[in-house]
Amino acid sequence: MKRVVSVSLGSSRRNHSTTVDLLGETIEISRIGTDGDFQRAVAILQELDGNVDAIGLGGIDVYVYIGSRRYELRDGLKLLRTVKKTPVVDGSGLKWTLEQQVVEYLAGETGLLSPGTRVIMVSAVDRFGMARAFVNAGCEIVFGDLMFVLGLPIPLRTMGQLNFAGVVLLPLFTKLPIHLLYPTGSKQDTQDETKARKFAAYFDSSAVIAGDYHLVRRYLPLNLEGKIIVTNTTTSADLELFRERGAGYLVTTTPEFEGRSFGTNVMEGVMVALLGKQIGETTREDYLDLLQRLDFKPRVVKLN
Image 1 (cartoon, rainbow, N blue to C red):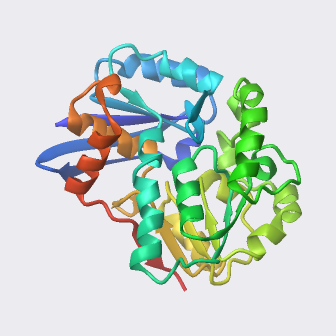
Image 2: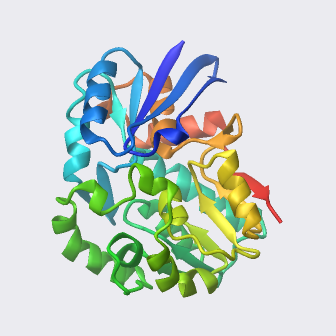
Image 3: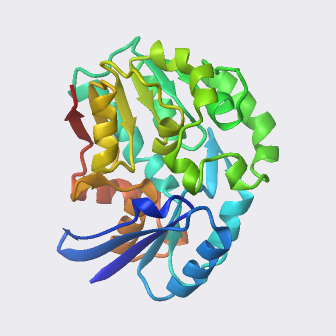
């Protein structure tokens, strides 16, 4: 049996373990949240190193992208470099492959996404493949990176604006502590009501709300009537929250195991364990080929 463990800076309340059978392999998947405790995450990573088949880093990115440019987050690199023996991933490989395919599936195989559909994406630099796929599908999109990550009242409406903002700001902001950029620990269980009210109009005017679940949850409006949520890392309780607020559909970019969808870092860890390669040896084509064999499809749940 192979073991894949996600070590997350997120809330321990979302911890979960399950066992799945994929392509003839039995894989034990676990998530360990450290409630925002960076040093505890380091200690757990050191303990796991060499003792599991793959490690995912949750609640943090190592790499974010603007087009072909890759930027490294200082805190993400610290965690990555803690691990010396076991392959370790942050989910970015799947964000360039699986998540892009999910948008293409929604546009081509369902009636949920069509040219002109209004989309609010809470952050695009951590999901550039998804962002580009929405643009290619002809959606009218707002990128919320400056609003929901930095708190600035500046919506970005084109890839050109997103590229410019990223090239100017990312070299600086990737050096900041992760808790200043992203909800970690207990912040994942609470809402920022001030920002939620401040930017509510962007949710209200969009048919689709897309991107990282914890950013979506942090700024979620009370009324989601008829809206389509495209995200991941959702539990059965999250599904009920969306249903109670009137959302029409939930689309998760990773498959469901025992009532929840794990993060892209977990699923990329599963794929690395199946491939049996070191990270430097794994190519985009390896991921695409394995995705085809696994036949992963987005989970589309009608809520109301």
